[in-house]
Length: 102
Image (cartoon, rainbow, N blue to C red; front, side, top):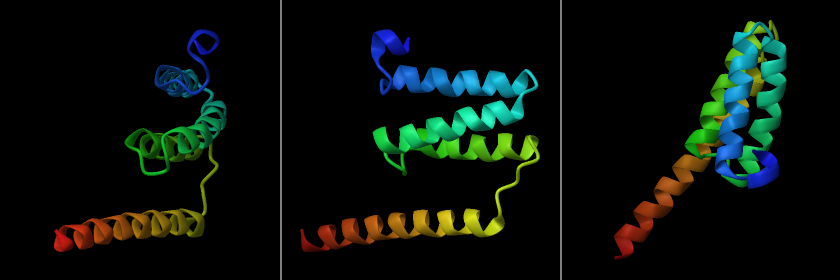
């Protein structure tokens, strides 16, 4: 699929996520986490950090890391959540200010 559609095509990215899921379900949670970690970087670059597919893969990565016994520290997760919420709040306030000017 990647050879035909390219590495950044949405269907290629979806297929990579599906393969990671089945890899973990087949008994290799560490392999699934590694695959999702690579996919997360690509999704962030292609779709952006706030896209629903990127957020879904981030969630799934956390699940497979946990299944593999590799828990992300609460500080790292807290920092990421704080950054994400700050971006969303800035976006909301910017949109509200633009609406107020209309």
